[in-house]
Length: 337
Image (tube, rainbow, N blue to C red; front, side):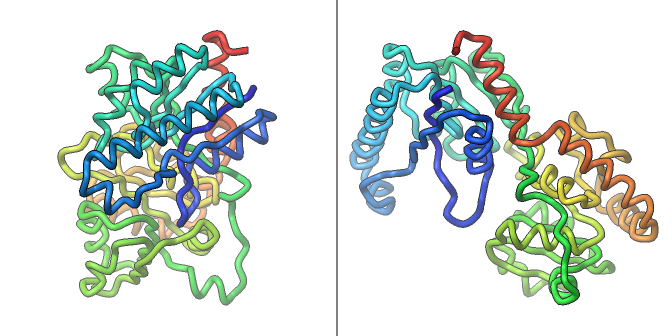
């Protein structure tokens, strides 16, 4: 299948866009990539002048349509969808080019623009069940659930040297951006050997109270060493008390693929995909987390058994090759050859 993949690559670290791009190629499809952030006008000017933003966005969409008309794809797969105009999707349809949308982020910021254009795609997929609920309520659409996943070529246990073990190893680790709800939990773990890595943590580094906090971007090559060197990986999902967010973080799949023992907050999509006590372990609040940390830090055999079962589960069912197959099987059933 000839596919035009529309999204953007993060300059700091790999995301699901890179993993899906790679999986499409490995599956034998001919993939052309279009960067939907390739503006001409600098962002500081577009933010000040609405007319410049509108002009450059229209130009960007025009270039995307020209690319599609030139290569004649069987499918235009859009990941994100924030910068795709309704007029562009109508032109795709008039040209006979099938379009599909994969929503990825929690419904914050510009998600309203995604909701507005979603009915104009031929197929809609969502990484989180919260987006499915929104699109069903607003448009009575029936999107297909396509969660995040892992890439075993990158996300795997990493044997470490003694020096690397000393550098990265902690009993308990958290890797991810600072959010207040995450700090409310992690700051209570001062009685444990805890390491925290990720951007934004400098704002609370002065409050670390014995916690090991490293602020800054963490690349895949680094955090797989953190996971491989540590006993327990904590995953705490973004919550702000206002935005519905039920999706399972990519870190859930990635940590499990590294054969890590995962302690995760009670997130709805995680519970629908994995069994607590078999593939990973869920905690309900800080007290429950502390109790489970004490329990599993003293039981290496239980941690290892759950970690291995979790790793087996994600490799058998939750890689980006599985996700690509699900998307394209659905699209093919709709008429793409």
